[in-house]
Length: 268
Length: 254
Image 1 (cartoon, one colour):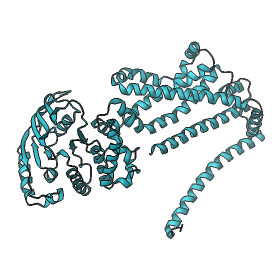
Image 2 (cartoon, chains in turn yellow, orange; image 1 turned 60 degrees about the horizontal axis):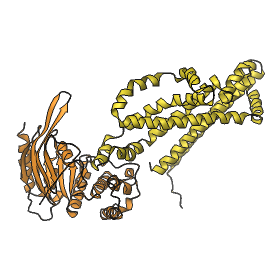
Image 3 (cartoon, each protein chain N blue to C red; image 1 turned 135 degrees about the horizontal axis):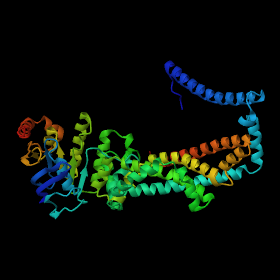
Image 4 (cartoon, helix red, strand yellow; image 1 turned 90 degrees about the vertical axis):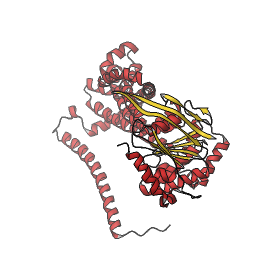
């Protein structure tokens, strides 16, 4: 294939654009490197107290040490709890949203309750959840569910309600019943809404899980953070927080990738 | 024989601040293969009338018969085309065309074949795997028409079906649609507020008054032209005469 000949201005423009991209990436990396370097240096020089603020090299040591022991077990526990809470939240949240879309009467009735539940910090329900389902994995999953459920309901319901009315009218002219209108128009119309809410939810579920682990657990990254704090092993706290942020990013990216695949397949 | 018979239709709305009579004693008949334009000022209940014929809305009084059968709810004998094409972005053109058949559970091999034939005849077959966003406004409207014709309706209702298009596209699409409808021998009822459009397409024009909508006049249009098209009608000397007549009828309200 012949390459099309580009005008001088075009080449210049493309070059400038590329350079800008490279510059942004370079600065992003530089910020991180400088941050870590000055942290390490100031700690070594004794300007900051590495017992309290830790130090990159010590965090790295702790990490290597953890990796040889039970790091993956703790990570697995947290990821498992998050995924279960996330999936339950997504499924039940969507089902509830469908029910409320279906019956505008039920939706009007539940409106004030949803508003209150949405603004209530669900972590406050922690003790209640522990008393009801017991202090253990189930309480943690419930916490994740409690945090993500209402947001999913509201987000999905809002999306369903904002489906282009003309599409619904069009389906009605072909005699579509409510079920057909939902499966053939309203739901496919809201695929992006669904993924937006999933993206928010994976983060929220993780918040619920960490909060839950703070309260009751014997394993998981949240447990490591609390434990590290109690025995003043700040290296352990820092290492766990960094691992947690990586885990959060990976889970978010997984949802984003899934969205891409589904939208491709769905022909958006 | 008349395909569509509308008898003493009356429609009243219950609004927050009282009762509104949208349509008052509307009666007319449409013969097989005829094209009837309904023209009237905005808010005269034109669209309400179409919704009632389509079975989407229940009239307060009166009846609608299609092929002698009383209409209760939406009927597979009636195709209804709205102002916007409403093609579903996430479906290919082919699957958009099948939408009506799917909803009506009429996806037989013969019907699929019919849909494919329609796509072929009207130059859209090669676009069957494309998505609506990849088509021009005029083509999208044609796809919407084929989607409606795929269910093989006896009567087609057009609800200002061209007003969302820009003027130039509108003229060509109107021409296009008119030819398709005449070729497929579809009985059509079109609602519009555009007087030239109503004249250029209609065999009969029904003029409605402002709210509440009443039949002011039913006008027979004859251009003495066997092969009339919307464009040729616009150039016909009689066009002006019809236009002035309808214009006077509509202005008489004010």
